[in-house]
Structures are given as C-alpha cells and as structure tokens.
Length: 218
Ligand SMILES: Nc1ncnc2c1ncn2[C@@H]1O[C@H](COP(=O)(O)OP(=O)(O)OP(=O)(O)O)[C@@H](O)[C@H]1O
Ligand SMILES: [Mg+2]
Image 1 (cartoon, rainbow, N blue to C red):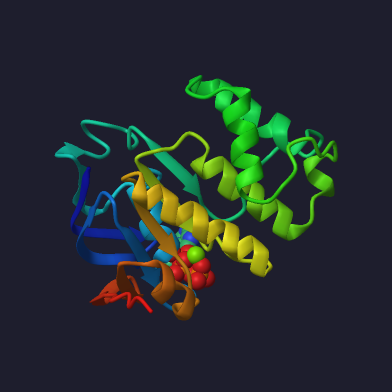
Image 2 (spheres, rainbow, N blue to C red):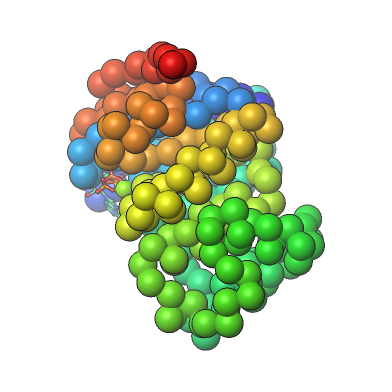
C-alpha cells in the first residue's frame, strides 16, 4: 500500500487551499499532519479520501489514479470533523447500520470496536445524549472498526480526556502493527511526536517541512 501525492493543488473560489503538495505515504507507518488553523490539514485528508478533486496534480494509491481509476480508496476508515450519526439511535445501532453497508464485519466486531474506545456497547442512550468526548470516541471506533488499510483521522483526540487519548493511542499503534497506513491531523505537536513516525508540516496549503520522528526507548 503506497499513496503518492503529485504536485496536488486545489483552488476554491480563487483561494488556493492546497498548493503543489508532493508527498508519499507507506503502509505500516503513522504520519502526522501539523499546522495552524486553516493551513490545509483537513483539505489534504479530504483529497486523500477522494472527497475533493484537484485543480491540478494527482493522487495515486497503489498506482491507481484517485478520481479516474478509482473514485475512493478501496479500504479506508475516515474521521473528518464532526461525524454524522443518527441522533435517536444508540452508538451500537449507528455503527451496526454503517457496518451493514459493506457487510465486512459482524455485530461482535462492532461491539469490540466500541469497547476499544472505552465505550459500553450495551449503553442504551441515544447518540444525541452522548457527551462531546463520547461522540468523538464513537467516531474513532467507526473509522477503525472494519480494519481498513488506510486510516485518516482529523483531530482524533479533540475533546478526549486522558483515558480517551490512551485508547486512541493504543488503537492507532495496533493498526500500525497490523500494517495499516495511518495519517493523523492534529495541532498538538507533543501528541504527534509521540505517535507519528513522520510529521508533515503545512502552512497556507503548502508543505513547509517533513520530519522523521525518532522514538527513543527508555
Ligand atoms: N468548504 C470550503 N470552501 C472554501 N474554502 C474552504 C472550505 N473549507 C475550508 N476552506 C479553506 O481551506 C483552507 C484550509 O482549511 P482546512 O480546513 O484544511 O484547515 P485546517 O488545517 O484543517 O485547519 P484547522 O486546524 O482549523 O482544522 C482555509 O483557508 C479554509 O478557509
Ligand atoms: Mg481541520
């Protein structure tokens, strides 16, 4: 699994939101997107998930041209900004509904994903009664439950308490170990340094630096 972004630019209503982005992403690695508000992190994740088209340039996933050969990555788990779940359904029912679209996983897998973010699959509360952090946790569970090859997470630790952050860290490390390609947008550079193998720093839609993170064992 290899994603190649080639001179990708996106202009919306005269504003260049992604500017000549060239970078590559490999399986079994965690990438961090860092940058100020409005620097293009979410836009790049949207581009990688096939939700926007380039004004120029391209993205290929295992040599398949996104938007031409394939409309979307074949196996992708996505958490971009606020996930839209059905307010009157429980967390379990929401994820079961989404899982039924592809039919790749069963109820047991859905329950395990919910447990893996520290939520209770038997919680009967409807989603609208969830707290902000619980909603975020459910969004992460939804993104990873089908064990996709590519995991794109936009600010996954927003609104999470320390225990929620620990669950997400564990999930991400496990997915990496299982060979997933993971890209996380996050403005908390400390958190990214802890999690990511490589950090891509964006400013005004451009890549201003790429850094390898050296994890020291103590
Ligand atoms: N729907 C849209 N239409 C036009 N421009 C947009 C749209 N959404 C975002 N933008 C612009 O795209 C640029 C990049 O925004 P983006 O959401 O990718 O930033 P970000 O790095 O994710 O910021 P944040 O840290 O606030 O999440 C900004 O200039 C923003 O104004
Ligand atoms: Mg964003």
